[in-house]
Length: 174
Image (cartoon, rainbow, N blue to C red; front, side, top):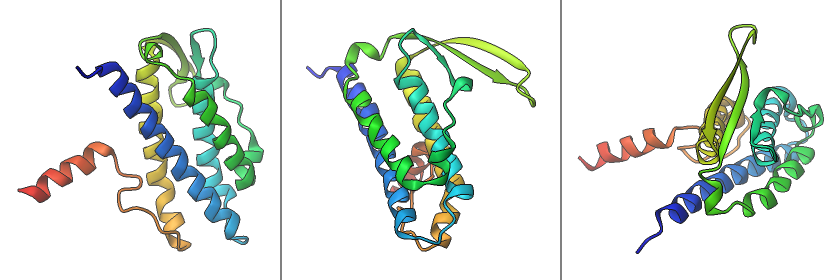
């Protein structure tokens, strides 16, 4: 009998590692491209994603406040620092267990055009991991054209929602 929880855990963690690997590849590219402008078009997105993963993975009290992110501007400026921060996430991911999936979390964040509406919502660890992975794909879509314009080779599905890729694949089979 297949353990659905462990399969779900494996799939979430595997996808998260793939996302981190993609981010490491981007930082590798910018390290190699000494004159490429990493900071503004790409560095801010990567820092933002790292901040969100850190907020979730390093939360110890059952509350995640995405607004109280670290916002380390060094990660935005230096791809080497971003790469180190990404690799530092791996031990946190490797420690995740099946029982963590259903762990309840209280999510705190601001909304509204000026961040003037604060809210709290119940969630779970699995739901937040899914959110962060989707959030990363959204940011990949925003940085893709810049990376490609500098000659970086990216998978054709980089920055495309997995559901869109799956839908396109079903259309090709018809």
